[in-house]
Length: 194
Image (cartoon, rainbow, N blue to C red; front, side):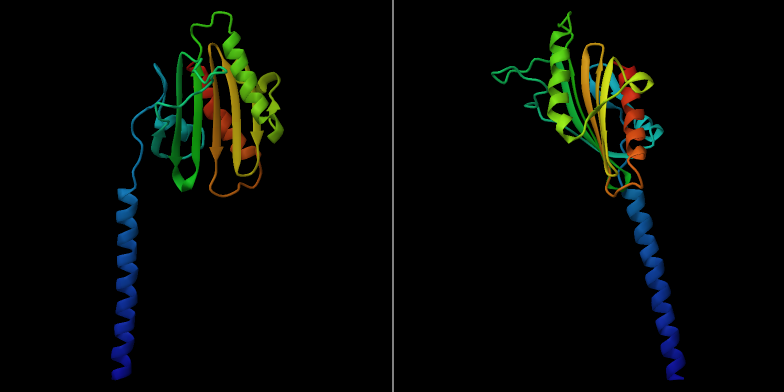
């Protein structure tokens, strides 16, 4: 009888621990924050949480905007040259993230500053394997990309703005094409709003 009672007690403890573990998992899943507000890229330009999902990046969980001291493109003295600028990181499901740095040069009618900013960002990343896009793969007026199995970066020049988008995965994908396609999908959405 002791053995039967012991076995029943062990089974009961296992069932209770499984139930409590499932309950804890359910409570944690329900308490995980989900970003519900649009993300402000530049004044009048936003990305919605649905934009991230539609691009295949997953559900946005939180956002961290760059501080007021963030400089997108500076002159030789460190003064900001962009008329408007923004930087932020959006944390996604599964530990992935998207970081966007963006600058608008609205007062630059000849696009000299915009072109210099694009060239500067391009020159900073070209040693890592940044490749210029051509033909139908071009996003906006000009673009370039970098891709590996755990990160994809896109640099875009569109109208009076330049932006970089970095998509970082928490674990490597099977090939570099998947993260790049997702980053480019979000970049196309953003470029269409500039």
